[in-house]
Length: 390
Image 1 (cartoon, rainbow, N blue to C red):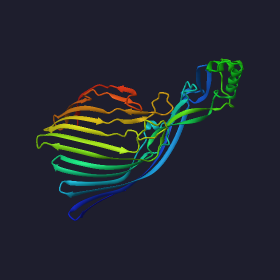
Image 2 (cartoon, helix red, strand yellow; image 1 turned 90 degrees about the vertical axis):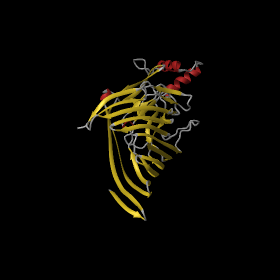
Image 3 (tube, rainbow, N blue to C red; image 1 turned 60 degrees about the horizontal axis):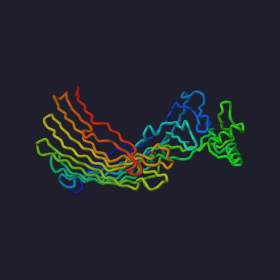
Image 4 (tube, rainbow, N blue to C red; image 1 turned 30 degrees about the vertical axis):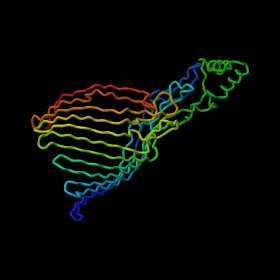
């Protein structure tokens, strides 16, 4: 439901847009995957995951559902000539990434004692809900030229973050620390023999716990394996606030112009690199700015754009075997793009585009910038083509 009003307060014209929307969503995810049967101790240094018959032809379905009310209020008023004030309040949602909602589970195929890890999706994830307050002041001082400043505050709930927790899975029993395993250690210690993986394995085989293949199979009486399982979850409410600045100036009738905008954010949602405790920070939060020089006249459009983004948190976890879920940051990045478009007529436009002309490299780091993680160099890319409108 949406309503619009227009009225005057004194000499000031005011426009109001008020509405509400209701949404209900059911989710279902079905995957083909191998189903884990047991973990076998195959040799002193080798643990092997065994799967039930059928391999990847086994199906798993998981579901979820949610509903939400989304109210909104927009007000704008030209308080003095060419100066517009805007205020907005409302609730918005952003649905989780499809990759986070995929059903299924993946566990280590070679789960050694120090490498019992896995990951899973979560089809029951709720959408990110944000209650937003925005206030802006815009000054249109000439044709196609303006300056604007905006303040915003967002209370974000159900943000999706990744959490690693210790989990047991029914049916997956552990030879490690089982009564047979501890018995072998006791026997080795009594005999004055060094206790290590090789000697424990050999003692258990000597005790008759090996199968025909010389492997040690778990028993139903053995303890369940404890897995470090990482999965997306909905975290607690977080607040973000910031300021947006924008300026565009067109030089009379020449067709030349300049533009710049920037967004600067702050919030109590940052990752503390000095803490080893699990954290649920807001991913992707960082300052950004864009600068543009352009010419648009007589069917010819030429633009040079430089886009900059400050360093930001990509996510938690580096897939390097660390149990403390360390952070992964993207280093600040600036890219220069250019485009030329020419309208041959009202139906045909030819264009030439260049992306990343400065050959910027994407880089990532860990807790501190000195911990280099990756570099991705895509090089400069160019496109030449035409668009035809019928």
